[in-house]
Length: 264
Figure 1 (cartoon, rainbow, N blue to C red):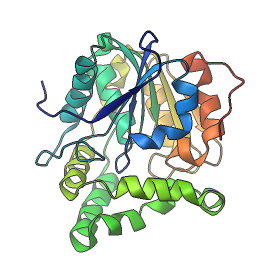
Figure 2: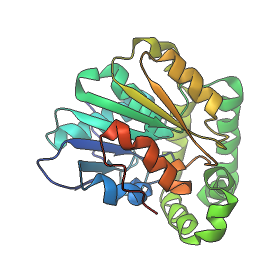
Figure 3: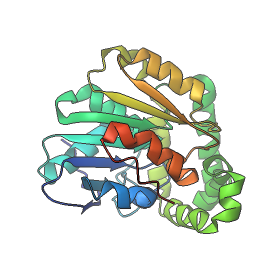
């Protein structure tokens, strides 16, 4: 049992089924704001900030995915939730994989977005490079080298408020939180276990995502029995913010929601 208490919030009806949302590395729970009108009208939505992010505490690094999974389970326990649907993006999607693999009795369904399930050498080297960047220029330097992977040029031009909101969340990541999360990512090792997945799973990839490319997520889906894969056209890494309408359409069936809502 973790001794870390993540900052979490609850929206929606107390009697509704529970949906746990897990944020990307470098983001906060507010990254899910574009989906909240849709989700909170059907679910009791629990959002939390990963350790070292947003308003959550920062325990000393390094971290592992066992730590992140334990933190997420503790959120459910503290909210007296026995089972939940889980949707996570990037690190949140990877944490969702860990939840589904290690505690399948607690997870009804999983939507794993813009994530990887393994850490090949180029991926590991990328995080070493980013940690060196952190030591040189801090979190602001990391943000300046992340934005282009997160949002497409059209989104940045037409919706500058989206870039501003993500930047504000990113800069709330502590340096130790970033170090700890990077070490967790370098130890990512779920791909070889996906054949034992028992939780119904939808994988969602962004067509133009370089961090979790569609081919990597297709391999994850093919390894995971009975799973499905959706690719959101034109989207970069933060799919739900970069292309919210197409993202919402991709999750409608899995979440059992009406097709009439599109979002903005």
